[in-house]
Length: 286
Length: 218
Ligand SMILES: Nc1ncnc2c1ncn2[C@@H]1O[C@H](COP(=O)(O)OP(=O)(O)OP(=O)(O)O)[C@@H](O)[C@H]1O
Ligand SMILES: [Mg+2]
Image 1 (cartoon, each protein chain N blue to C red):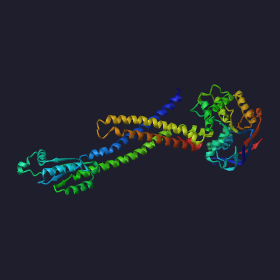
Image 2: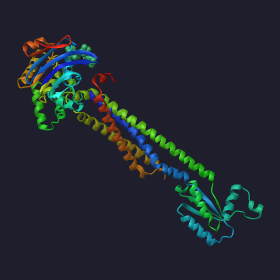
Image 3: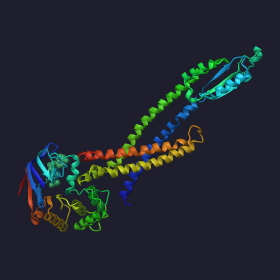
Image 4: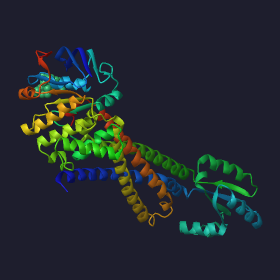
């Protein structure tokens, strides 16, 4: 291999490496986006409410209510907590036997419900509350309003930050890949001009450059996909339920679509630009 | 083939040639002479539409240079064979592929025809055995001859040669001139820009001379 060929190859290699890195970042970003709802579901998984029951409700009624609540469309789980369980839990927490002090157990029977993530907004909780309070066995409906608000607020904030970052990131990625492709075509600007002088049409000149750019896009996308797959495989055991292999095909597709379209369009635009620059300006460009 | 009437050539607001008339037909063998920097290359560049013609009327191979569209220029250039002062070979491919590029760009796709035409011109310019060399692996004179091969491979109607003998030893340039003379005899219009007086004496032809920004026939 001659010296020049080696230099040409290593320039190509460098551009493939930098495109790979950008696509890898796009892949990781899409991994985060695809798994973002799992993350937010996870954050919301402890949101729920407690229904306190009246004193005189019969066990059979309680049973029925518990069943109804556990199959309600908003509920993830419903669990009956007897007044004895409640008081022993509270005694544990307080470290003081208040029953002995008061002479009776003031805590009522209750049912604890955990909500599905899509019903954790304040207004859906309020409408659930109205419905439940209609039930004659129910005395009180309780949920930790501030906790719900805080969780929802944070999830919203984080999603917004995620979206902004993603958009910013897309711009940077497009710019970086565009630049890399342009740079590799820039070194051939005189070749492009000579090709024009011997009667080649713009389309004919553009074609091999676009093909070569797209090939580098495909190569880079392949490397990036391999790397993302590796990352997913490594992380999935540590982040069960949050990172899974299900989304991997989507990520690989996104990486390829990105790699191919950006390199193709950048390549075509770069050649067009050099086709239209007049020869004096071409000499001056650096 | 080439018809210029009252054409002025301006580059960067400096007038290089003023009100020139030039008329060449198929089969003409012509020289363009003039001092260094007199505008020979510039005149040739207007013929292949690298510099636009803004004043006067200019026609080349059936195209009007005054209002030629950008997308028509490749078609004009396919009717021309241009030999550049600085060769201008495509440095990323060997000589064979340089010639192939011109033919493919002109939408010739028959592999056999491409092969035949290339081996024909390669032997005309005596570059047999050099087809697989890269341009930078050839001497200046060999590159010059490769440039000539490229200019004639697509059977152009007009050949424009800018100092085609600049880097050739007398033996080589005689053989190149023989080729150009033969092509002119076969009906190609040949225009050669040169300082080489000896050339003109040995291979006489029409002589356009540039002096004081004007073109005259001598
Ligand atoms: N790109 C350019 N922009 C502006 N002026 C130019 C440009 N190229 C050449 N010139 C000027 O145009 C004039 C004619 O140049 P040209 O190259 O046509 O001369 P020439 O007759 O071919 O000279 P030579 O015999 O050295 O090849 C010169 O005065 C030169 O300075
Ligand atoms: Mg010149």
